[in-house]
Length: 324
Image 1 (cartoon, one colour):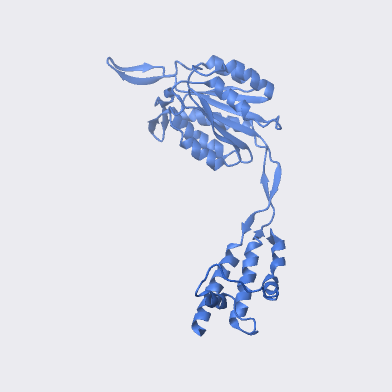
Image 2 (tube, rainbow, N blue to C red):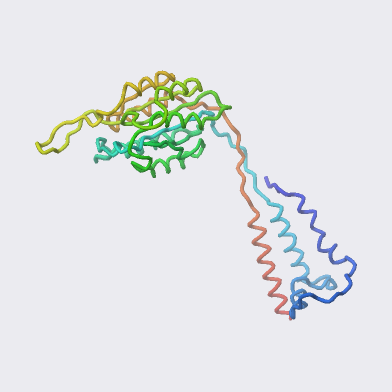
């Protein structure tokens, strides 16, 4: 259906007639002399004496179209039901220097840990229809890249733009949890979830992971921690190829305690397939509720009468020049 936001604008329709029939103002000396002022006035405001003048009708039409545009017409579509769970789901991603280790395979090529997270987490984000998502990036410092929003596309784009080391080379797991607590909506006390991905131990920050987890449990925040990194990897050394553990610094004990103290779980992602399986399991642990919310799409239409008014005004000027 068609709606006008500012319907009162149509009360201005008789304004040109009121101005025309106002008592004449006593002539005074002009402060500014314009040589062509009379010709311009005759062009824009045709003589009212010519009741059937095409210029008069065009001027009236232009005025009406301008009022229609000023009233801000919009087309309101049919009501659409969209799913909405009301869940606050935050994703905290480690950007410390150790994330550049290439121990994940993606598309037949070895990639670093962050690239693997981007590929798998991107699919997870796209599936979270109805949830409010937030993106937290942390290294030596933690900061909110994207606040809680229903815009999954923006979350996905900003995750892909994340760069290793942009938040420092160390890892502040406790600060990342603390920052997520500050960003929670106090009115929403249920269905709060934080998914924290890291490949190391807490080596920076002002808050310890255990202390932050204790505060999270009090606030009703469920934390799922994911330890990222392979447990064995072949590297080239002076003595030939040797097998090493690239995840020797991963503090699995602390990550497990953090998750279990908040009612969550700890997962270990040793490869891309394992990481994808973890996200699939998280979809089952934190299913999307199917509550309905009604939305009516709006499409602004003021550009059409505004364009028509401009065209008719140009036509009016051309007719005036032709009959001059």
